[in-house]
Length: 181
Image 1: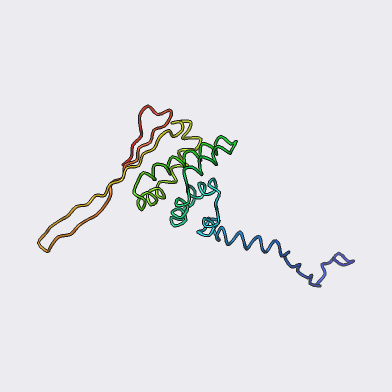
Image 2: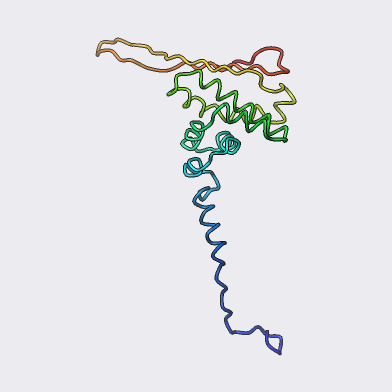
């Protein structure tokens, strides 16, 4: 403003951004992507089992979830759970560890695939609403078997492949196991 109270027409120089801010923003963009979702690069660089568990249960990107569940270990999750004082985080990590244990009983190529599909349930099973109603997850089983059928018609035969997946969970307050097929 000049002495008459009018805005000056003189242009002000734009201050350049500080280099550290630019570097931090670029690094965050590279790790999280433009929509805030973790990327495969984030998963590759992350070794923290608690962070990987959060990514696996929260991400909507199936490729990222599959890469994440491959890095989760039951022992690493249990250790991370024992090291946290936060009861909700501890319950979450032990729940994810039980999912990993159940998937490890399956053939490896199917275990990781199925685990990546059901992993969001671990977040739900350790949430306050679920815990209030059913209690903590005690035991989890995932059963898998191939299922195929063959049809023979006038023009020849064809096979249709498939699979049967049964999901059984026992919770501390449930009066019977919950089963989904």
